[in-house]
Image (cartoon, rainbow, N blue to C red; front, side, top):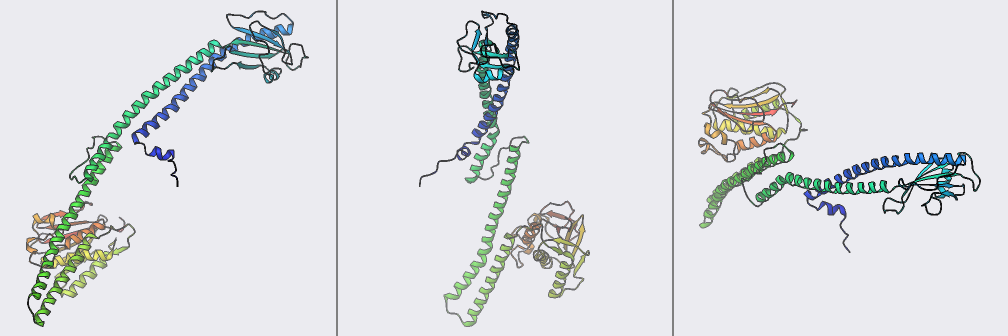
Length: 484
């Protein structure tokens, strides 16, 4: 099957943007210059024709008066002025004519028929190509409203040569064409240079983006110190590159940390199984080995689930259902008291009534559960859970009265697999606060950790102070209120 030829639109779209801009600018300038030149030409032609028509009107009046009075008409033309005349009857026959005119009437039958009723102006000979005898005609009826018989004077025709008028118009057309071509060339050159200057930053962006795509890191676009569209685009692209590099670094760190954390239990599991196969074992020994392997496998499954929880937190949409934070916290605290046998004075709960936010109740429960686990495991009683409304935001605080967190460790507390020195001997993989931070970020909220008189803001989107009682550790979660 033969290929179809490319359409002009396809070929046009394949041209470089700079060429298309200059071509469009040149086309627009051509239309403007042509319109301006046409206007000037029409105005000049009108002025020249008006002067000729005035002379013809004077000459025609003299001819018509002489024809009506029966006086003799002039027998020679005014050579200097290039004036001519004819006297025609109703059948377009020449009754009298001035010397120098060719034989035959100057009027066409249609022009004669019209001139029997009213004066008619007409041209004989064209402007281009150049005519040998260009004339401007003015035909007037001798006696308007009557139809003379054949052989009687019916129409007088006054004529004047248009040589000077046509020459002036041809000269004007030539000058306008040259001026328009020069203006179009200058405008196209200026447009090309402007387009090249405007697109030069874009080309730099493209070349630098190619370097980044080839693997270069830490490269940023050279953005000019202006505030035009290209500069704003460059700054936006730089922000995007920063965000992408940050995300890439986080993912790279996540992979490294996950590989490290998974390697240890997998190595232990493989070692236990290998040792069990090296020599014969009793049934009790094999059972103990299997139980140990099952425990290690359960730890691996829990670690994998935690990793998936951290990495798979979709952003909460604006149409999420309402969550009653007051009821949510009360139920979670009561469940902890029952399961752990804690007294209400050990695990306290203070909430304002009717606190609601929009989000996923299951994921928000996971946030509070992880914070309570950390407080019970690493803190000291009493542990206080509170929820209040501050400036239209829901503030959830979990506070314990333990020794607190080293202020130097606070910026890393919510990072994956990061654990304080005091927590390295306890069970866990260091993903609890990372999960909390991921869920809170997905709900467009803010997480703050305060300890030992210092605080760290994980995501400073809202300007609410991170309150923390003296001593211990306070983790604060800020969520949007019902009217946010």
